[in-house]
Image (cartoon, rainbow, N blue to C red; front, top):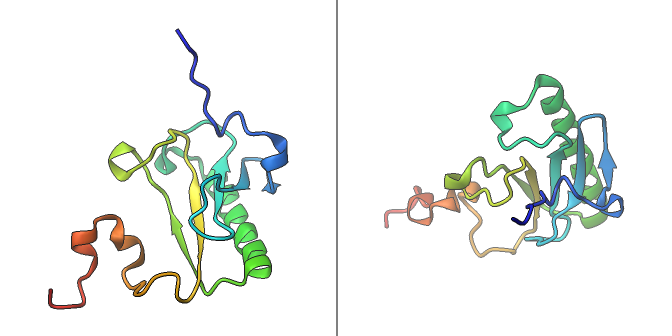
Length: 129
């Protein structure tokens, strides 16, 4: 039987842009936009709701760090921050990770609704469709 290796547990050190005792951050391998980053706990854990208080603080500290670097390097106009927690929510890698997705004016014709677009037919609540 072939052993499946978690891609986040087997990251090359060259990909790591920042880290602390409990977490690290990398650029997404399949970025949605310039500066798209992932904040990942060092402990292999699937759900944000199973993190310890120390891990949550570490994850949020690196989220702030990644945001500051993105702001300086890419100068986005906004950000989406998201977690796909569980297969029903679209999680494809079973190791918790937080997406920091820089957004740029004009990258979508109408960005209203942001993360609500995970279910497109329910996203637009402001117009009378």
